[in-house]
Image (cartoon, rainbow, N blue to C red):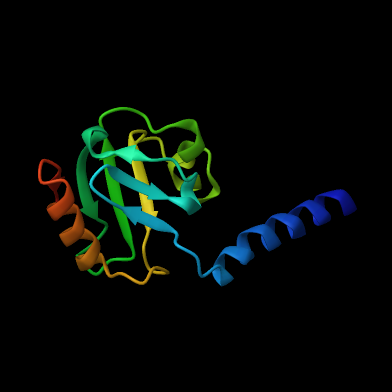
Length: 122
């Protein structure tokens, strides 16, 4: 029981340290996007089919629908735990944006500018 408690405490501390990390978390550029919290792997825009805010442009999450399953580093990252639990959306990368400096509208505008071929839903 003590080992389980220590494991849970360690995991909680690992996740909590991200709240105090002020470094660059998400990069959107002409090549693709990279979320350090979600595996830190570059996803080229060619592999992105569509992007959609969860509710509206000021939402706290954006979904990236890919043309193929995401790399294992993204799929098994703690930030994408929801993707492992849901029975659908296996080609979807969910990016939490509430803790970022940019708004949902800023992110969508940047995606439209950098990857005009990517469909923006919503």
